[in-house]
Length: 513
Image (cartoon, rainbow, N blue to C red; front, side, top):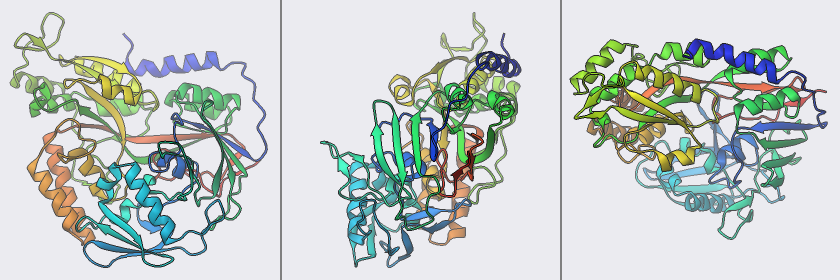
């Protein structure tokens, strides 16, 4: 049987064999070549903001967040609440779009109104009812009721501003965004999964030092690792963790950082399935050896997770403790829930049916598949039959049954406010709560948090919500996410930004051949 510890040795031997003899490929001067981890299937800022805004640096948002998740000016110089439902946004003067036109309150109102129409989920996130210009550089935003987090929601990448005349297809989806960022789109080669950028000389902020950027989609982590070793790309995110020593030995720089993301297991449904019983959910949680997974599967990247937020984050509840690895307690809980014995094949049964499930995950993040294999093995040790299936994210939604589970890596602070993620996963109407979780106490806390305008008091309310969810085991948090970015020796000035969804480039980067 392959154990967790042996995975590391097998991976190193495999990589040592297949990389022997690779030749370094020549790099184009003044062009940064990035191996992107996702398919590049769209460039509409309202739907693909993570790529268009954070990675390609084509568009920008009104409000930004600094590395400590504090709000700072972006395209907006300032913002203030005029009434419970009206906010005034003052835009930065002297900003130009890539087509040479000036940024105005009218163009921003048109752009954001379009974003809300194209991506309906944004209305729930921002609670915006209307946007209107109140001067050349003054914008008024009306919200659906009192909503203190509004400025934080304007950080969200899908709320970035594109010129209203950006080229769109017949369905109204933008295919050539015209932004205000330090880089402008030169060409999107969709069939080749490539995006070509060139710096924007009239950018209002710090001018880009790299002249051109080429993104190429490489969804497989192992192939991304091989490509940077060959020299065909200069930067990749999330190389396989077992490759990192080899990459360092080849003279590549490996940046390791923590990011606001958590590996979590959600259930297919909490209704009419074994997961409806909190004892089953708790048993599955205590059967997971989080320390072993972080140490051997993730190669020390990340930390065992208690709740949604790492305790270093300002709105985390530090009193939550990582659930202990206790397989004996798991067995007791399963027995108490009516799942008795071990059956003919070593699995627990109830009313003649085995306790069996499929654990789904996806391949783009290197930690997910080996984590799923390890967790399935640990569950089987307490009598739960768990099969692992790996497929793309969209396919999982179609295939997953109510009695199945999914392991995924969720970004917990794409909006730097605690309401964003907690509402998505714990509210009965949350956009990510597909498993039907309901808790009246959490609903009360979420609504109280929305009404509270005092920042410190809001944080305390959301800490209480986290405690309630933790006790109820509505989902299983496994580990906080550790990310690695690998760069070639010619890349200088890259600094990981923890606010990024995956990674974020910056204008101070440069190439040194």
